[in-house]
Length: 348
Image 1 (cartoon, rainbow, N blue to C red):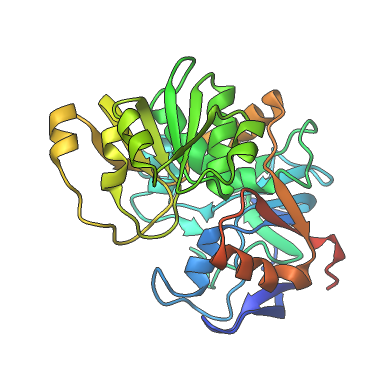
Image 2 (cartoon, rainbow, N blue to C red):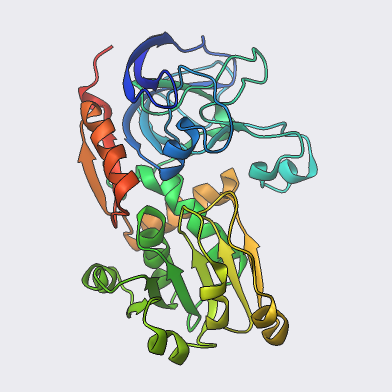
């Protein structure tokens, strides 16, 4: 299938149109016309080589909403015309204990990422959602409820599941005291999901400049991490803290905020952090953990949860030719919304 996307030719090149071919349908494949594609901060990290050398040209994007245009002969769960989603992975071994446990993100033999990975059959480089079409095996395609606004649903496939999975794993429920560090693309989804679960949610940020935005999506307010008195008064006041900051920072600022047996879960930064001071951990039986995305079953669950609770990411819809400008904004600030590319205007 001939198609087109926006690709990086090198880590410093920016993104520009790139014509290429998607594979022919295999017996269990779904062909999708991409309608909307979210921009994730990890797209920038990946393309810029922050997490290792990349195969160029590379089309990023793993927050994908589209419509089925063809299916392989053995596909049972989807038909032409269905609204569907594709998230951060498009394959796994399907045979290991983690895959059998519906946690394909921890596949013992390695998941295949939506872009920058290698197809398990052909070894071709996978290309992502900043494109007009994609072909994905049925097991990694998700159903999108008619209750969701498809122009705003794409970020649920990464920002949504990345925050939903640890909230669920650590049993966030009514009465849980939750802190969310950062109110960007991940952070604002964490707030909305935790509030819907019944938690009391506070955003933790370097300033209170986004307090109105935080309150508008259900947070009780903002705790300023640069206000020494406020931070001291907040000691031991959270059961759970979700750290969404995507750059190197200091854990030690936040661990005293956890109550006894509290957990701080990192979902933002992948890479070095400041040296950890262990006293708050030892004397409060506090812990620091990490979390990736969720499996396909859990990703379907968060899509359905958002449909049930009328949760949509805060989105700024842009045209494909505005991708580079959006990337520039993400590198210089942390907007409390997700950029979503309207792929309807992209012609093959």
